[in-house]
Length: 250
Image (cartoon, rainbow, N blue to C red; front, side, top):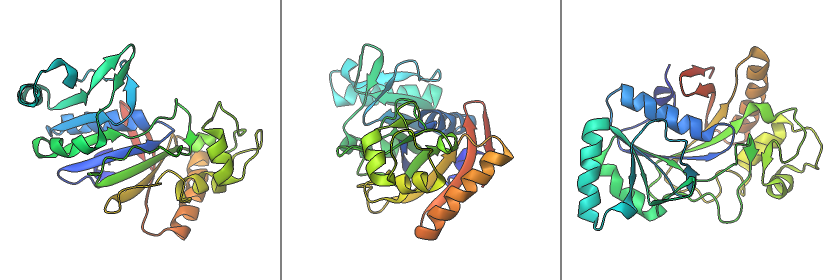
């Protein structure tokens, strides 16, 4: 099963990804699948992404075009040729700067899906949002919180976790303590956790990523059972997502 099918992607979905544990890889994997299916998609961010993380897709920078009609014309041309295009506001050094979350609804009529990175995690496997995060587009129809199963059993420190203070407050961990499945579930389920301030009409999904062994699958199932027991409306996916490979366990 491919990732798009397991996430139950719908036509004209605005899919916003938050969390850690391979979130950017998940976005670009999904972009690859849509490209292979000859479906049109826009990849964007409401924060920023590394300029090196484009996976070969063309980048359309709004700052390069003097009027809305000019960049819309360019967008149509790029989509006709490439089918998946990255849209950002501008480039600053090695970062591609995102667009205003309210502007994302204007893309929906051009493509089958808009894929949005709505926060950052500095390549850590677990995080909780700061007060100004996530930067959800109001048009979000599918909100996906990504966590890395490799966080479980690791010491609670900044090597594994982004925003230690927020995670400590939510999960009750002290620095150096081992991270548990309950701690990961707390980062997902807490009112100040990964789905904080999510648009009310969005479908919600948890993607437990980096699961590449039976032992990790068992740990991921523990997290999934805790999450499902406390919020039955959440869809839970267990997978190992890479750019050139996807294994879906659940």
